Image 1 (cartoon, rainbow, N blue to C red):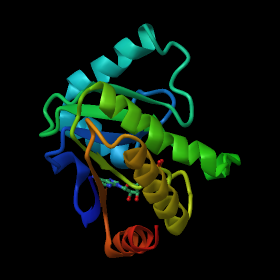
Image 2: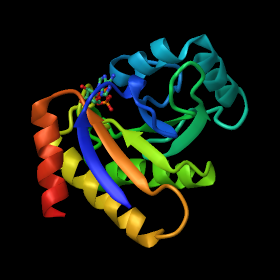
Image 3: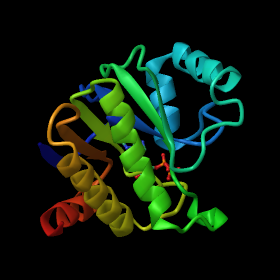
Length: 175
Ligand code: ADP
């Protein structure tokens, strides 16, 4: 089992699954969500629309996760999760922890061996990077410890700059 952090572009990552910091509409947005939709091609939006017309008519709840194929991306799957939005008063760490745990649950259902996460909620949704790093690392480490057999075995955090990388390195070192 491994947990690591690197600077990079999630849309270029060759993991079995990448996680999208989506919004509850599942119909695309800015930040990493926009980058993933742009790189995956229009079939990703079609797949998300299908979810909205079938299993997720009311959208995706904060803290929940759901998968689609990754289409034109190097990954096989995109796992969409909705982080809590601090600007809307969503300040419960359990909601953010749930994003990581539910994403790993979905990855396990897909038998995805490696999962790459962005810093969910650390962008437009306004959570402080050190809090996101600590919650992400603690939750993923706990999940992996509870699921020693099977998939996923590898968690990668793929972040945009040194500041975020350092926060995740600190969290990995402390946890
Ligand atoms: P949220 O709305 O959950 O805060 P954002 O997409 O606004 O989501 O930001 C989450 C994090 O993802 C931010 O640190 C942002 O800089 C980062 N990010 C944006 N584009 C990419 C990308 N292509 N690869 C990895 N991380 C990205």
